Length: 437
Ligand code: GLU
Ligand code: MG
Image 1 (cartoon, rainbow, N blue to C red):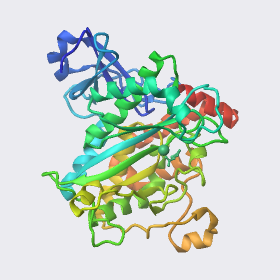
Image 2 (image 1 turned 120 degrees about the horizontal axis):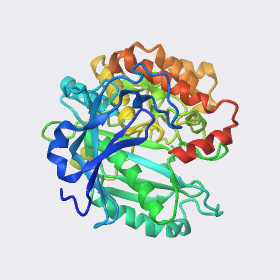
Image 3 (image 1 turned 135 degrees about the horizontal axis):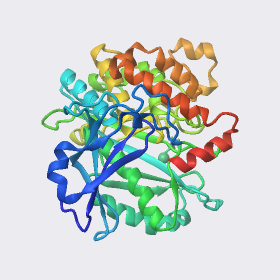
Image 4 (image 1 turned 135 degrees about the vertical axis):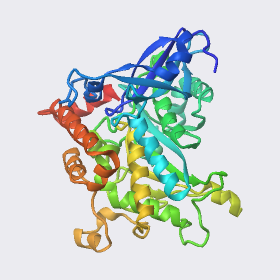
């Protein structure tokens, strides 16, 4: 890729806090740095989203390399004034993946899936965001006026995305106040999670150039709707043949899909702290916000944790390619890599153990009593970050996928993040997260 006018390359990691941090080097050193990387500090992993530092097993010791990936290199900004950016992996000085590198965990999960089943994930992250401090206009849900307000920056954003691996799909004014949704085309393997990072970076950057400030925070107003990240999954084999659909199944799921979803739903409580990692995430994950509140598989139901999506094609080959399901219990306080890793590890475990998902629902589960829910294998997802962290702490499965050291560091990280919120009311907490994400 040409470096344009840029004199620097910024190497970026999307860290445990779900934020993009990194360092730069002169573009003339690409050949050397693409192998050796730039120096990185272990304790950086404990820098929370509020820039406080959690208890760290590393203290002031140790050295790592943040190594740019040529496949994840893109330009941000107007041509001629652009900055070269490359997403990267954190490695030991010997070149091994570091146990706390989010991108390396996602790659490991994808390889585990491929090794077990021969399947590669083809996926897309669908994002919602809101404008900060925009005046609220009544009657603007899915509205043309709100769309026109955003048209100039949206078209600039779409043009910029076109020049990256994150190919835009649709853009719209969403339901909530000053809320927009942007979707992109599915991509293979780790590129899909890279694309989610790229989309968040460019949205913030392009809109700021138009004097508009965006926030992907899970929820801006405790009384309103949240901003979701819905991850659409499908599978292909090494020859890119689709593996997700089976016309013989009443809901169209292949065995691979059924067990993968079975695994996600079986382990959902245990990975919620990785998918929805902020205290305020749990305001969003309540019934009637069209997010996810129960461990259910929904057939075309927008309140299910996992939803089988509709297909518009008519012929069987096109249906097999279009067929996909989405996981709706994710938000943008999570690094796309960690959310992806957790879901793919859980899904892979489901395939390994032939876990069957519960029957798909098409009803409002919030109307059922505890007993009725339990009889059918359903329960509310954890209702606070504290609860979700406790479940994760006790999860042998999560510890086996990510390693004890990672889980312990993650728990300490989140404890420190929550200290910052002590004594604040929900709106004050939302206000803090609004500025960060
Ligand atoms: N805003 C909803 C969420 O928090 C999603 C609405 C929709 O697009 O169905 O996930
Ligand atoms: Mg939406």
